Amino acid sequence: MLLSCNSGNDNFYPTNCTEVYVYGLKVTVNDVMSNAIITDGLTVTAKGGNYEEQLMRLENYDFFVGVGEREGNLLIEITSIDYQMFTSANIIVSKTEDDCHVITKELEFALQPN
Image (cartoon, rainbow, N blue to C red; front, side):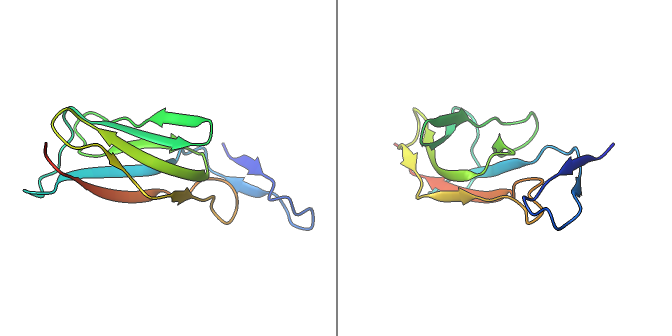
């Protein structure tokens, strides 16, 4: 089954969009000292305006995902009792050219242990 998206331009035929669900963010977190990937005890949150979402870690994966099919300007906040709090610079999640999905931003951040 295909979905139809309208790009806002009536001079073109509608685009056939897939039903796949695309996350706007994929975040990997490392320990700055050892460069080891860390996931345990972390809370990774995306914030933008009135929007806030805690990213999730899927079982058996070493990264966090979220902001599904949502474009916008976001900050990433990472908290943990074992590491210093981290807040990213502004991150822009954009739509694909056909306006069907978002383009996943793959990000990597390093945290300083307490």
